[in-house]
Length: 290
Image 1: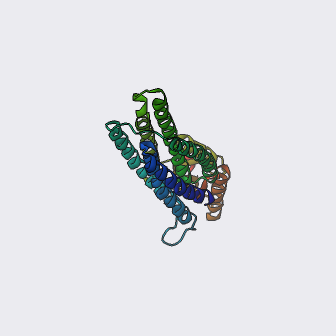
Image 2: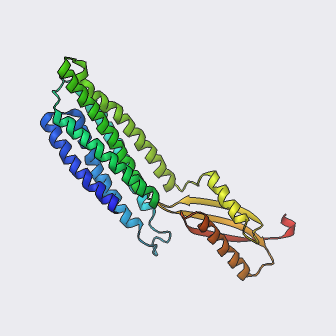
Image 3: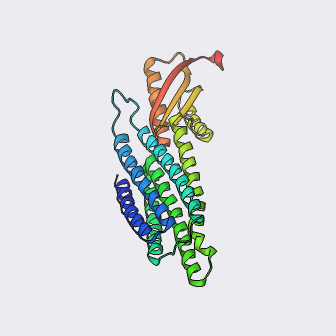
């Protein structure tokens, strides 16, 4: 929650800074970068809100918890990034057909400040996001990373424009919008990757085969388990749900079956801390089934 709040406050401050300096000194890349940060404000607010919701315990209407709130927020961030990427490309192309604008060192300084601060925010946020298994926070971290690329493009573009003015290189003065186009494509790629990940979780995509094999081996090592009839596992925001059908000797008592199911759940959760729910269905198994 603290990481998300820091990201929100930082994005508000950087949006004001970039728009202010960008419009005063007419820097296309800084204005586009400011628009990117404005979208980040919305994304950070969505992340903060989704994290509050996702941490709520399960209730009657949401028996599996609220973990997917973070996945939805991650999808929202992806859509916002995609739209802003398209906008930045359009804005940069338009700038190429306009007279080159004189670059100012204050625009360059603002871009450098944004680059450094966003790099720090990315490292800080991605570490916490991975530690807490927070999809929304990891998405926000990658959003910060896209800002690093955008700010880097602004630094290169404005720097090239200043150098072009200093040494009489007319084409170099268009480095600002050219760099913005390259970075916009990178931002769109990040948005597409994030969107695919969110859609996969919302559509309850099965975990990778390697994970399923891991879980299967652990289950087969539990006493009395003779076979696995079916196993499925899916992400539910910041945690995992496993659904398994196992065959136990038909002569076992209900109590023995219950105890075996509990051992399966305990073994899986001890192996993988991301697992918070295990749904187990017991089928009778006889020697003739072997």
